[in-house]
Amino acid sequence: MMKLSQLRAIVAVADYRNFSEAALELNLSQPAISHAIATLEAELGVSLFSRGRRGAVLTAAGEQIVYHARQSLLHLELMQKEANLQKGLNGGQVRIASFRSVATHVLPMVIACFRDRFPNIGITIIERPDYLDIEQTLREGRADIGMTYLPTGAEFEAWELVRDDYVALLPPKTSIRGVQMTWEDLAAHPLVLLPCLPCGRILHKHLTAVAPPMRTASDIQEDSTIVSMVMQGLGAAILPRLAAEPIPRDLCVHLLPDPLKRVIGVAALSDALHTPAVFAFLETLKTFDFHSLAHVG
Image (tube, rainbow, N blue to C red; front, side):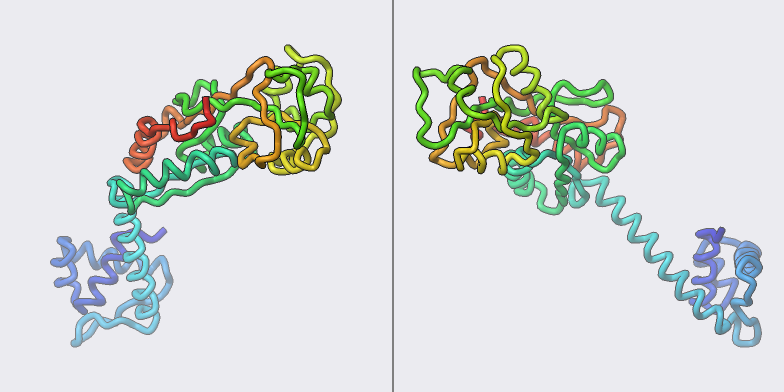
């Protein structure tokens, strides 16, 4: 394995054409420079310099190898600069794993606020299909912050962000008997639901506990597909309000007879070494005014 000291030695000798001056430049002894070059030549199996009256002159092989050595040192310098940026707030990157509804209706407002204060920090949103995938993405180190359901596992530091009502969506022009929708009103329609696992688990458990048996038309993965099916009169649906947005004006929207909310939280690994950029975004989330989400109770 080539050493950084060897790369610096070959570049310095190539620049000064002299082992003694190269040693002075690197604050090393001449024997140390000579040893670094000799061991590098032995490892590569080629001669790098010819030594004579004109000093140390690169061989043909040496000219090609010193080019790559310069490029390697340049990349190492860029790596250090990038690390320095990451340690400050004049640069860096924040990676956020989120499911679609939060990525669409919550994060853009927070990111806009954050960018006003820290314009040089990059933000990447990693959309995942459900909260279990989000938490696994955090565990694998592919994201710094996750938007998930609460409660989470013990390995995460987490706190509540918003509470999102589950709402019933009924086809256009649907009438109900009273002011408040009942389970019987909903049962009059075939029900289009999210699959039970993983995101639909909360709802399916709630329906099992409080609602009478209802006809299920189908299990659909995509929220927008469910809303479109209800719009076409193919059934009713229950979705978190954020997931249903934008809700067509003609649909009838009601809170459930037995209310249900999903608690959306922010999570990060408790033992992760976060950069200042990540800490700054977490602080923005903690202090952001989410009252602008008028439909979140």
